[in-house]
Image 1 (cartoon, rainbow, N blue to C red):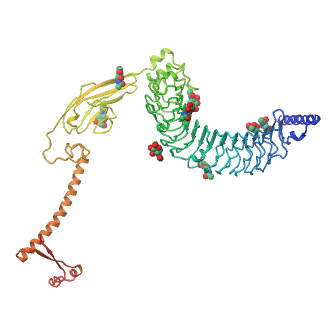
Image 2 (image 1 turned 90 degrees about the vertical axis):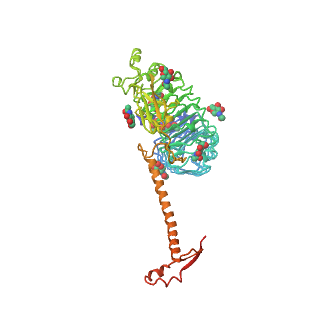
Length: 609
Ligand SMILES: *[C@@H]1O[C@H](CO)[C@@H](O)[C@H](O)[C@H]1NC(C)=O
Ligand SMILES: *[C@@H]1O[C@H](CO)[C@@H](O)[C@H](O)[C@H]1NC(C)=O
Ligand SMILES: *[C@@H]1O[C@H](CO)[C@@H](O)[C@H](O)[C@H]1NC(C)=O
Ligand SMILES: *[C@@H]1O[C@H](CO)[C@@H](O)[C@H](O)[C@H]1NC(C)=O
Ligand SMILES: *[C@@H]1O[C@H](CO)[C@@H](O)[C@H](O)[C@H]1NC(C)=O
Ligand SMILES: *[C@@H]1O[C@H](CO)[C@@H](O)[C@H](O)[C@H]1NC(C)=O
Ligand SMILES: *[C@@H]1O[C@H](CO)[C@@H](O)[C@H](O)[C@H]1NC(C)=O
Ligand SMILES: *[C@@H]1O[C@H](CO)[C@@H](O)[C@H](O)[C@H]1NC(C)=O
């Protein structure tokens, strides 16, 4: 079948040549089609793909605009290999065994627009390889084994707009490697063996609009990584498996409209690094272990229209998360761990046109009623969201509900306080008190406590809100007295309960009052009581330290006094000088009997005041 077509083509070509000869064209070799290739004069292309060639054919159709040499076994391109093809627009050498491209191999291809060298064995380009390609617009060197890009390698490619260099083994991109690419608009680069963003090399690309960087082994994207790329609109950072954070100024100097940071290791939305990108229209943070989208932190991204975070670890999108984003029309948060998505997270749900919410363990209750109500205006992609957590709705999807079902099925039970018995507690100062507040409702209500100053009680500290809903006041102080309010709430409503605490002050302790400013713990509670072990330990340590100090002091002083006492007894009268005898070590060891021998040698006199 295929052979038949080829034979047919050959015949066709003979006919063309004969015809050409007949009308006596200036050169009949213009359309010499090398034997294994298939040429098509009508569209001026020569298809030598898969022709078992081990080198570029010597004779090539001079008028060809496209030369396809893919899937051959060509190993080398020599100097001026294609110099006759002055009208060639597209040259495809992908999928060969190219290991060597000589300097000026492409010289003469003055019309060439695209050059594809992908899937070869290239390791390096000498400076001058691309000489003469003044009109080249696209260069594809992806999927080779290139290790370094040397200074000025691409200096002749002043018209180049698209440069594909992904899937190589770059270990080094020299600072001037990209110099001369003054028209480059789009660059795709793979950095699997680079240790840093090639910031300096990128600064040469004054009109770059789109930059894709894959596989860099960074933990943190440093400040000013892309600093002077003023015209960059699209930045894609993908497959940086270790990238955990973006420094606050890492995207400084950019004015992006589209940003993707995909398949990295971010565990938080990089709010700080993003906030100056006020022209951003689309952000994609898919496949990062991000757990929360916090409230009110994306508000600077005024023009944002699309937010993608597919395949993350989202457990919650807080109320107000997309506040300020008045143009948000696409939210794709498929394949996360979300149990709900509340209307309150959005600036307005009316702008939303696409919502990817499938593959989340959704609890179908009143919080998702808005999704069901807007299902005719919102596109859910191929998979509409389904209910996961409630047994009776297991597997239902939002397009199956009838209008009546909605209100009966997507319901909530208002948060309620279970035990409303009054809690009015009187204690002496220093005691601990627990107030109870347990709530029920669907979804499970949140419980919070307000102190008498109506400020929310935090989960840590002397007075703290416990995770089971109780309020604990430890070592009560008289100024803790007052009314505390327990507030339980869920999407369906809220309820509150007031409890009161009266702390009776003890008379102030009469003895030493510890007033060290640095003591962090409750000064007037008795040390050692109620598990307050930190304090008692401190006092003990202090006492021991003091005792040791005093003992040694008193020891030396009393030794002095004893000595003076003995001395004055011996002499019977008070003198104003004291003569102190001492025993040299060596003398001491061999003079157990004679005490008078050495008295002469070791003595000194001191004056008593
Ligand atoms: C070129 O030739 C190959 C092999 O004969 C064929 O598979 C392919 O479709 C051709 N390509 C074009 C663009 O004609
Ligand atoms: C060359 O031929 C291959 C195989 O037919 C094809 O995939 C490729 O797109 C062609 N290249 C160009 C530039 O047409
Ligand atoms: C570059 O990195 C890839 C994958 O990380 C590795 O397989 C390859 O050996 C590295 N090459 C060099 C030259 O280090
Ligand atoms: C990056 O810039 C931010 C904001 O100015 C600064 O707080 C941070 O220290 C800088 N980081 C480094 C590594 O210089
Ligand atoms: C940022 O980009 C927007 C459009 O993408 C443009 O209107 C605006 O002027 C740019 N701002 C600066 C400072 O370049
Ligand atoms: C969300 O993203 C996934 C994965 O890219 C895609 O399959 C799905 O169609 C998208 N959903 C919407 C609503 O765009
Ligand atoms: C809550 O926990 C505290 C301390 O763990 C305990 O004292 C209290 O009884 C608990 N409250 C309820 C209602 O279980
Ligand atoms: C409690 O519910 C009332 C209406 O029932 C509402 O006005 C109020 O804002 C809610 N308070 C909280 C803290 O949710």
